[in-house]
Structures are given as structure tokens and as C-alpha cells.
Length: 235
Image (tube, rainbow, N blue to C red):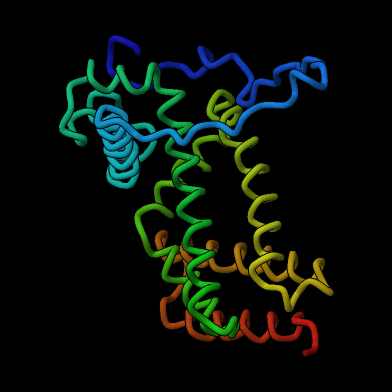
């Protein structure tokens, strides 16, 4: 960490985000293994996971309140109610903390998507409404802060962009499994998802900056619902 307290340059994060380990050839006998024993979480491991969660949530809150440039490591530690040394015990540098935060933001989006698919009959109006509610939450603001900062911060982009690709592919794969009625037209589903994301998230950003009149929101969402219905395969 830098002496001034800001996230240190992410150039220290040189290694690939996903390291590829060569697969060694093994004999048939060596490949026969007993089932792995169930690992029971220890009290210490549970406490460590909770502390990591507090630090990630504190990072999200700082991003929302002061933006990426104002989010410092001392500020995150203070927000989490921890010392800076305790924070370094769980995240060795700012790059690992930022990466964990981006992963958590993506995972929240996936969890919300799964929940919405379980509690509705996949009516476009209900799905669009659920998505619109998601972009009103702090997590959306935090993610946009990181996404915009990555445009001019090459070290942050090295972390952000591979995760964007990974989660976009996961999102589309899960969508096909969660919405089997679209499986005959996967390209239409991909178009519906891309259109929904672009329009809804763009509207949310425009509201935050004052570029969109709030009274226009229902009509725009209704237009999106109609387009999704037009793309949906016939029953």
C-alpha cells in the first residue's frame, strides 16, 4: 500500500487473473481416488469469511459515497471497523480487494437474476420491473464507478475486463437454463438480455446525472417489455 493511503498502483498486480496450471499425465491407478472428505468450516474460517465480507461491503459503500478516486485503504478499513493491519491480513494489496469486490458485485447480479426467474412466470413486465429495482441499489452505483474508472486506468482495466467477459458468458449460459422457453431462439434471448441491460442501466445512469426526466421511465420500460415480447419464441 502507498504511504498516502490511496489504492497503490495496480501495476503490482502482474500475474494473470486466472493462472493455468499444466495438467500432468497420471497412470490409470493414480487416477482412481477416494471421494474427498467433506470439509467442515472451522470457527476461524467462518470468522475470516465474515471479515472479508465486511471489507468488501465497506469498499462498496466507499465507492458509492466518495467514488473510486476517493476510496482509500484507510477509509475502507475505518468503514469496516477494522485496523489497516487487519485488512492487510485478509487482502494483501488493493488489487486483490478490488477484484474481490468486482466478483461480489457480479455474483449479486447473478443471484438476483436467479431469484427473479424462480418467483415469476417470466412475464416481461415482471422481469423488467425486477431489473429496474436492482439498478436503484448501491451495488449498481459502485459497479459503475469501477467500470468508468477502468476506462482511463489501465491497471484497473486489467482486472475489470476479463471479469466482465467471464460473467457475461456465465450470465448468458444461466439465462438459457433458467428460461427454457427461449432455448429454440438463443440469439433472440441474447438480444433481449443485451437490450435490457443497455436500456435499463443507461436509464439509471441518466437519472443519476439528470439527463433523463423521471416521468419518462414507465413509458421507456413499457417499450422494452413490448420488444421482449416480440422477440420471445411462440409458445
